[in-house]
Image 1 (cartoon, rainbow, N blue to C red):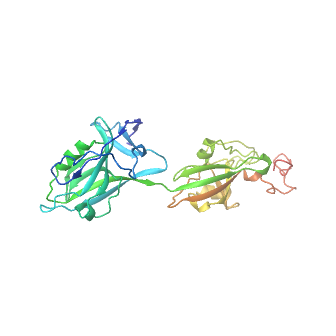
Image 2 (cartoon, rainbow, N blue to C red):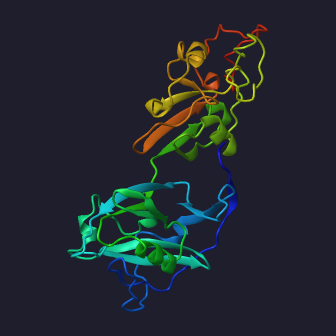
Length: 314
């Protein structure tokens, strides 16, 4: 059963101090208290969520903005009796009571942190650690204040490597969508920013774009008009994709039968989603494509025998 997250985030306050190096498995006091320098991670970019299925009150660190996501990166940092240091400069960037965010501020020059199996970057937030080859020794570091993080890291043997997991904020690829309207409406283009998985119909309705085409014949009934409510059966939300067709999901066989077979650049907005995409994309949509000038010939009529190509409303 999928877990549900509460809708509130724990309020965190930026920390006014950075901390000294974590030199080994034994906690060391900070060398000096100093103002935290500007980092690539802003505490406002993160949020801590409380999950109802977490009986121990554990918190989950997540991206605060829709345009970013928190990706888990796991690395192994070598350690030994001769070189027990993690070689990390850690910073408590936000704290509130028993909650906090501890992130990597930098690496000790020539230290073990520089020898990790993958680079650790400033702003990486610590979420878990375990002794190399001993997953049962794992400790959670997610959502904890600095002292708790140091205490749990210190419980791991300093004579063996440490497997460290961090969460890294990554900018999500996005699509800039331009929505154009039939000439008779005299409306300016609308613009939206969408992320992977966004449904075109829901996104446009949320932006105030009317989709129901008054000239569309319902595909399911064969006659009449009307909105099926996003079930993909009426064909009244069809849009023409003037640019960026490949950035949308593949049409189903039903959608191909309804629109794409005759109009290859048409999509049902209720069934089309963005992605998968690996880079920023640009999409141009023409809503109500039947209403654009020149779509119908002068001799074409509707089911009632009325001309479809008529002045001011095609």
